[in-house]
Image (tube, rainbow, N blue to C red):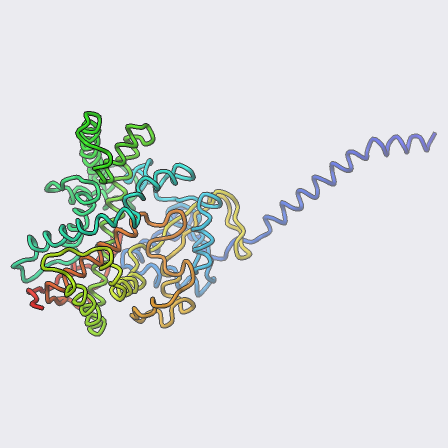
Length: 479
């Protein structure tokens, strides 16, 4: 009988034993999983963290030198901090860039400050994920990809020549940065979107930009409040254009095969119920900001480097004189001419390596991430930086030296990242390249020029720009 009782108890308790063992092992696995340590670093004060140090360094355009590099020295290339209320892991290096940027939508997603989302728009590709992001990017890419831009080259050339003749001719001094901003802004609107630029439009857009990284607090007089007011003015203008374009198409006044403008392509998509009106508005706003501010800065830094390195300027000038000598009087450039500007593009790329138009960008972990022996918890922000590779001896020998010829050879993936990478690689990359090369061509072949302030500093608010607007002296060139 005793044996029967023991047998009965064994049979009754065995399932409980198995269940207990299973739960114990699972708990142990979870415990081991979370034993993976967080990256080293200081989180600073509650909520505020190290936000003030971050923004103070940013304002002086010293984010890498004063904020990131000292922490790399102390903690290593991966460290944690707290910025704008969010626990954040900052990573550095081509391998980290590749890991983050190529795992968009899988491990991380784009994460912008609330003010940026409100001002750029929740329906822009900046905020879209997965299939919707791919679809909208595909529509925009038909005009911004290389094939789409090929037809734009003559139009861009004529636009640049007209702009220089109207705004530079007869002048002795020009603010290069401001002039380039107006030019690139007008190119996006008139050459790409087919919208005539009206007086005051660029000032309205710049009021929006001022609030992009400010606290999203609506009180009278705040940067964000002023920016939102400007955004509503822009929205009203774009809605009017969209509805007028739709009417033209529906009344048969515009043939699809005859109109290659991006705005028309977007409106056709809206008529076919593939795109909403709100998506058109938000993506036009984003495109204008992405295209004109960063390109203007890249142009300014390219001219700064040419002024500081006369030997490089001599090579660039010769490259463009050779191209010009094979053209008829008044003949525009074509795609084959652009391909011949190899050294000029090396100079522009090296300028963007030393002075990247963006510092980096934030992502948000959508799951727990294991990387380099550390755990990045779900919900934490992750920041990758351009300077983390651009200024790294591992990827660029003598990284603080201006050396365009370094781009004659290949380099590791995700080491040179002025336009980001992965699925969110800047959609306007090819347009920016054309703008830079075409403008350089017409300036160096038509004008003698010199910087008034050779060592002008760069500041940020919120994007980098030459603090004095990069004034240059100009006079007609006779070749």
